[in-house]
Amino acid sequence: MLTDGWLYRLLVALSGITLVLVVVYIVVIQDNRSVQSEINQRQQFINQSIQLGRINDALIHALATAAVSNKDDKLRDLLAQNGITINPTTGAPEREAAPAAAAPAAAGR
Image (tube, rainbow, N blue to C red; front, side, top):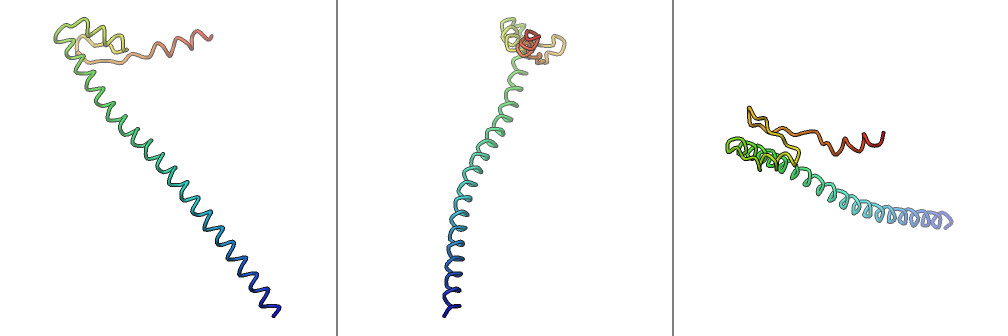
């Protein structure tokens, strides 16, 4: 009889521990799903940014070509305001270094 009571208590304790572990496992899986969803959204944003970057480069190149071929000073000025200079011999756009980022560093010295 004494061993039956001890065995019963051991089995109840092991069952309780198993139940707690199952609940912890469910919570961890739910947390993992939410983190995975956030990572997927970030990856989608990165992929879309890359696609938009290619479109942006093509648009800048088309605008620079149009500015050179039509001798459009207003379009050249618009591109220059956004940090893009046009090589007059080839008509290819060149991005300038960001002067706004360099100015605060020099002012802090």
